[in-house]
Structure formats: C-alpha cells, structure tokens
Image 1 (tube, rainbow, N blue to C red):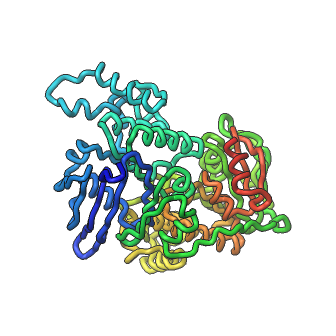
Image 2 (cartoon, helix red, strand yellow; image 1 turned 90 degrees about the vertical axis):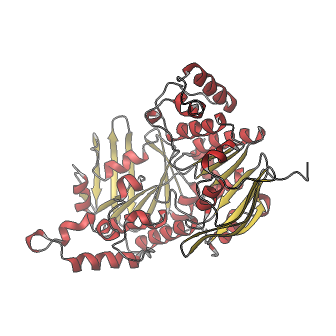
Image 3 (cartoon, rainbow, N blue to C red; image 1 turned 180 degrees about the vertical axis):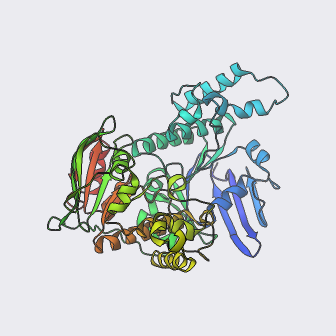
Length: 497
C-alpha cells in the first residue's frame, strides 16, 4: 500500500493567461481519504489550480494523473466521471428546486431522454443524507435553507455523483462556529469513507484543526507541503505572506475616555431586548455571538435601518432619534454590512463612483452637479490612505480581490467622516494579509478618536483587535470580557457553550 500511487498527482502544472503566469510548475499530490488544506492569499493561484483539476481550464504545460494514470485532456464531465467534485463558494445549487432535486440532479442528467423518476431521486437523496448522518426536509426549497444547510446539500450532491475527491472553496466563510463544527464532523465522516477532501480556507484555526497536511501557495508557485503537526497558524501566515504577522493583544483600558455612544434598554420585538452598553471615544468594542443572537439586528437598528420599539440612544451626550439610515449618516454613524457584495458595493460601477456614494450631496456644486476634480481628488485620497491595490479609480469594483473590495467599502463610509463606525464581519472571505491591513485601519481610526463596533464570528479576530468584547445570546448581552484577562480559548468556551 505504501507504494500505491496517490489519488491525484500534478506534475509541473503551469498556466498562462496572455503574459501573466497564474501557475508556475506546480507539483502536488492528494492521497486517498486525506483531508488536505490548500492555503494562500487571494490571487496566489488556488482557484486556477482547482479549475485545472476540475477540467474547467486546460494547463499550459504539465500532467494530471488520477490513480497513477494520465487523464489529460480533462473537461468538466470527464473530471466528474473520475470522481472530482468542486463545491465553490456560491455552492452552484438550483435555488428554486428542492433538496431532493439538487442532490440527485446528476442521476437525471445521465438519462435526459427518459422521464424523471422522482422515486429513484428520492432514494438517492435519502441514502446520501443517511450516510452523512444529517437530517433535512427533502422537499424543502433550497432558497429557504440556511447557508449551513445548503453546504450539506452541496456535499450530498457530490456524494450522489460518486465523488472520490471533493474540493471545498471557503466552505466556512459564512458559518457560525457551531455550524463549522458540524461541517468538520461531516468532513471527518467523508475521510472515514475513503473520500479525499481539499479545504481552501483563510481561517487558519480550521486548517490546523481539521487537516492532515497543508499546502501553501504564493504568487502562482507552491511554497511547500507540510504535515499540520509541523506548522502552526503563525508559521502558515508567514509562509503565505512572507511577513511576520503580529497577533499580540491590543486591549486598552478606555474607562477614562469620554462617552461617545450610550445605549440604554434598547429593544426590538423578536430580535433583541434590554441592550445596555457604552462605547467610548477611540474604543474598539467587539460583539460576538452565535447566529441568531441579534448582533446584526442590533447593528441595523443603530444605523437607523430598523426602528427600536423602546430604549434610548445617546451620541456625544445628545439623544438620537433614528428614523432612517440617512439620520444615522447625518449624525456621524457609518455601517459596513456583512453582505459586502449585496449591500456594500455596486460591483459593475467604478471604484471612484463607489467611494463617493455616501457623500454625493456634500460634493455637489452648482446645478447640483459633482465637479469631476472633486470626485477624483476624494477617490484618489482614499485609495492612497487605505492602500487599495488598483491601476485606476475608473476600474470596476468587480475586478478587485475580496480584500480590496472590502477596502473600497471602508473608503465609502470613512469618506463620511464618522464618529462611530460599525463593522459587521468585515474580514469574511478576506485573506490573511488583507485582514491584517483592515485591522491596522481599525487601529488607526481608533487612534483618531473614532468609536468602532466590530461584530465578528472569529474569537481570534476580536481578541486581537478589541479593547472589550460583548457577548450576545438570544437577543441579550450576557457578558463583557477583556482580551488578556482571560485566554482566547476561555472566551471561545464561554461563547460556544
């Protein structure tokens, strides 16, 4: 068995797009039944590598072997027939179809000229979900399911198609810790069945927790492959970026600073109740809690998107009555949504147009027109200040990496000169270097006196960036913690208890 060929072997895989080399001589192996993590910054070549294995892209040079045999040329249909399944971030499910139809879709596609056998599709779905030891309403419509449940459907669809290797691209980026734990348990079950899983993730704690080996990529090249036991999160981050990432605790005692935002007995029926907290000038206040804890609902109320049923909000000592988000912006409150693509930016529009969106009225001059020079100066200023990597502000936001898109969202709201900045899961889907860049922006804003509320699923994130951390559960604040006065592990135990 020791001399048996790995399930997947890549030798010298390179891929060029015009004059750009996206992959440069990649040698890589994945063993049968192995849990393998593939990590690297955005743009390092991970997605290109996966697409080459999945038959979506043809390598410029190199060979792909499965079970020791050269399988080129590959196309998506042949890759699936060989047992390669890819679960992309968008999951690629049919939102208007049922769980059964999504799981067993390939069994129908094999016989497109024959009538649909719903009883056969149902048996396939039932068998696969039983294999995963996971219960789902088979008749539920995909659009009605949670993100975590959709992940399970995508995995089940791969198993129904006889997967032998499943690539999971950022499978946990939108999941709570409890949902992550459930997903990792399913991944372990796949391993026990001899199915290899390649995890692509920016959450390095998960890499260390679940994988047996980790492969690091940088600038289209493979830096190396290591047993997870030989590398920790700090070492992986260094290999990915070439930088020494500082994870030291930054919590400060802010009790002597003046009150900036004071919330008392704030309630909204069915979402949160009796919320009391104070945010001080220059303070970074974290809010953590499981899905459904009321964190985002509270943020939307503080931003005027929803109205509270009772309670009060004071800003700089003055009562604040919010009837819309315009009231919040006028008062000096900005909000960066967790839904960056849906609510944060207009992807087809230019970087410059996105940056000025929230301050257009202030820029308008004679005849209510925005002078081109004023627009350009503002956009250029924020691109420079936030180190947004872009060839020009006239480029569409959709051409940027996730990290740079998030910086455009930040620039849009920072252009309003806020007193309070609410960041809801600001680093979801952002690589380690860009995460660090966002943390540095937060720290600089705090030094300038901006009060920051940072909502996050990642305890390591609030632990490394916040002065205090509020813990929400079932719509109430049940605790307040100071990083350093208890360990990260102790904080996690309290939150996920």
